[in-house]
Length: 404
Image (cartoon, rainbow, N blue to C red):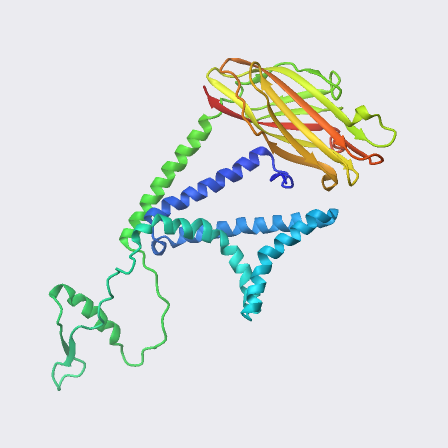
């Protein structure tokens, strides 16, 4: 199943999500190396809450995918889905039944799944970043509570005492601190008090160092991302020359920006069924045009966002194929299949399996071929056509750039 099939996000949105994840992961690695949790509780807590929100989004997506799966009643996919659920969650319940602790499993499962991303993205990298601190049983023993004897100074003075320490002078402060913790005024509440977290000067210095390093990294990353796109208004596209059974002259238009090429087809329609000629089941459109780009830049396409309308019977499948090449280059292609489960308006992102770059020239000749096809047994019907919302079939090519 295509990863982007049911999220309906433009290519730019997918890139933003990936960019945010990378930023957060590097953010964590930087702090794991130099900042202990007790000195940077706010940062660690914030990271955990963000990962919780991401996990909630994943669980909502799983629920929605399950709803779509059962709505279209595909027996094979339903069986595979139920089997995967049983193998994943069923083992937890089986173990809880064996240990007679099912109630505890049910009560703790929500918290466990919300914290699961933190285990993977916070605790594991923190452990790997601080593996040099593992003592392997060589940690020094805790100091004794009191090394000396506590004796009254004299019998006439209440509340006065003297202590003879057997430790070196450098350890007397430890004895004094331990003694103060044992002596309490009469009537003082013996209940344990909430420990107040005090950030040491060393931890404060580490937080400042981390903030400066991360700001430096983030600013440079933004500058690097910005430098990989040519200035706005420096790219253009020439007239379209089109041919093929699915795009008569004047039925194709193009809109170009620095990050995408939007192709709109007014007549790209394929159909199958009783009384429909076999030639209507397959339509294609070939386009040729010229790109003008700034000197010193190359571009390519990394994905296509297919948008249109589908209505097919149970055993009918639709195939969307996109190809492009530059003058003198090889062909990059992508193929996406649709079924009855995708009936209605669709928006599907598919990525090219190979990357083809334009030549490092001021102008580049571009050739695009689009194909739609329906396949099914005799007596079955289907149509793939323009979206009723805008009466168009749209293909959005995501553009990426690099310097020559």
